[in-house]
Image (tube, rainbow, N blue to C red; front, side, top):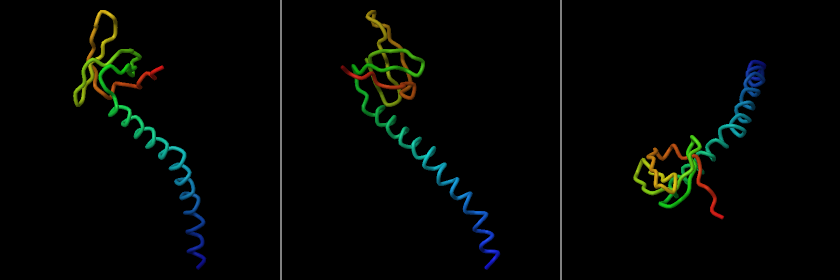
Length: 92
């Protein structure tokens, strides 16, 4: 019985650290990824977005993996992978 108690005393702190690690780091990251994927799936033509590089533009064309943005009144177009989109600009 003493050896079992010794094992539990050594294992319980590691389990507690893992549980805290899970709730403070892993779970919030999963939620953030799920929210980001949902945002990418909801994008449509004419949405204004910001890329990870800071380029702001309006979606002019989309397919499964890429998005084409118009970035100026002169209709300058740049093609990006969907994963290059950081966020959608909020509509006022």
